[in-house]
Length: 63
Image (cartoon, rainbow, N blue to C red; front, side):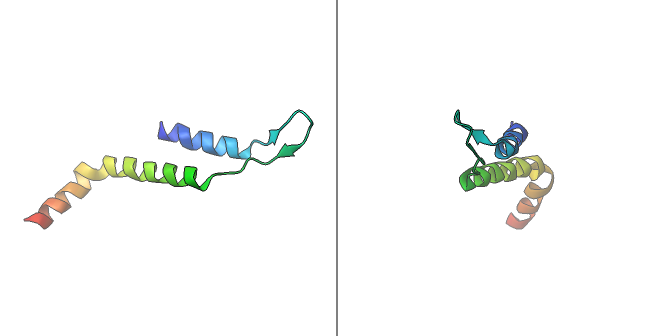
């Protein structure tokens, strides 16, 4: 789902927005969207490596 969100973000960013009069504007990217997608990617990445790498290190530090 996160990969689809990134793909949609970049696909929409490149597509110009045109109205019926023929004037076209470049689609503006939102910094908030980029930050949320980045944070979501970090959370998913941590979920993948948590059990194998992060948790054993934290358990050793608590003992």
